[in-house]
Figure 1 (cartoon, one colour):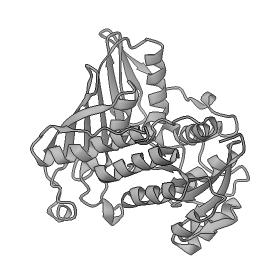
Figure 2 (cartoon, one colour; figure 1 turned 45 degrees about the vertical axis):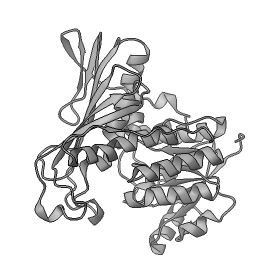
Figure 3 (cartoon, one colour; figure 1 turned 135 degrees about the vertical axis):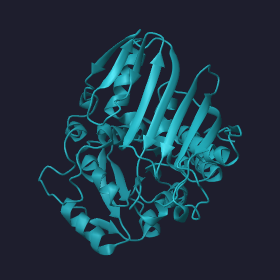
Length: 372
């Protein structure tokens, strides 16, 4: 695409509302439309942010020829269907995690991108968090030496969340821990083996047929001597919320803090040292740089309680928006593109299958954006 502004439509205005002012301020974007099934809420948000195009029907939105790209922030079970519809309608797609809930859906999205030349990006927050950008900078400078092993975890108590979360297999929402262990070495998962452990409340099990309180997966990286381990829990496990990753290198290693808001640790040889993670707003256009540390609202302080949710997700939101828009403008693949997003997502899908089969090794399919 040329330097003209990209007309963006945001679908889903709970978490999705966080991104509205970022697109409004980004010089490459025109925050053109929003979509929400609840008409009252959709119109309220449209009015609050001065957005004239307000839709309650996603299919109608896709008929609008002015829209260049959609950013999907709907419940998990809608992601694949809505992404596929958008690509078939000629729209570029940014989608919150995970990409899909089945391997076949991931394959369909990758194949559509290959056939149409359209761009898909899974908006994985952790790989644009300040912690990840800090470790990535260390790695690219050679400070870590050779990466020897990677580990990540995402532990969260989902009691009281919307009903579709109840009993969800832990690995079906694993991208926050799978993403960083593949993104740092820019690797692809070749195969996985996963074990389930413990048991959730009996009333939670029937919806997905998944009994496990915790699932822990080993990942073998393709064409590499590296392996990684990821751990996931959603119910009945005592632990402060944690999205984390650790990287063990031949020169230095990085370990995420065990307790939120405390310092992470760098080990140089056998010597540990606590470290303050810097912000990475300097990588962004000045117009959106404040969104790495401030609450998300517009410059006129047109505030609504649902919008003022703090920086969250390691300051990643403006970085995600910038990567998507730059990829479209420069005519290049974003990270992660459709094939990489599918690989990351299918690790979790196949890991749960492995856990249900007692740790059986599961090979990931090949995903390619080359036209057949």
